[in-house]
Image (cartoon, rainbow, N blue to C red; front, side):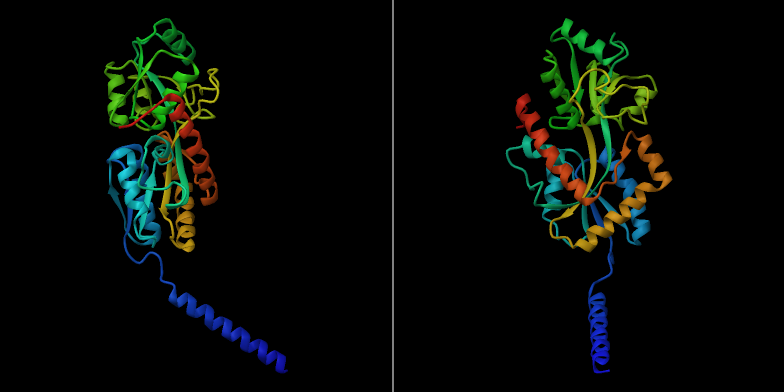
Length: 324
């Protein structure tokens, strides 16, 4: 009988402790959440962030406010996020510059492995090689032969030094030994416009700003850089199918929070993101933009970050790419 009383007393104490802990732990979120986007409005990362922010506001009951902080290849916004209070009220949506910049810049305002806790790689878009309709090549194989037969004549427009389309074009240039130049623009929009206007005959850009022009006949798609064909452009070959292996690259759209953010907050955010990305209307919009849903776990996204930092650092070094 005495043992039973002790056991009951122990259970009561445990219940009180648990109740006390739950009472002490504040509800999350209790106020608006800032979502930093380290790029200008209208780009792929901004579009994805806004889709997610609207749904996240609905599901969490607090407004998620977009804060565009463009500049320095995303470093300004990512640096701000790295130094924000780790309480769950600042999150950041990053593109592939997050994993490229450590190898591209001599100094950056964050450590890709220590400054953040990964939440999820929400979606990814392969890059796509395009040509102005006046270019005689109808496939990637034909384009390579055309470039080899006409050294120094052709060039690729890209969204800027250090973007994955720019690095992808540089990787192709090095691996295929092409005498071709890359012309970095200040974003995907201007790069796509340059190819449409035939100011630059070729392009390598992310799919979201490019796909409408491919479907509209203003650009010719030659190949995508994903491992499998894209649902948005199912008739376009992958680089591997075209005979060029090891050319995979995509533009990730990841969510991070500052290092030190409570695990419960990270888990809540990941759970909400996974539910949002599974919603039919969200999937439809994201796929129509040229992205594939990923919704990876924090552990998987952490592993991806480590792998891609190593990969792109090597590409930057091998291609001799430098930023001022």
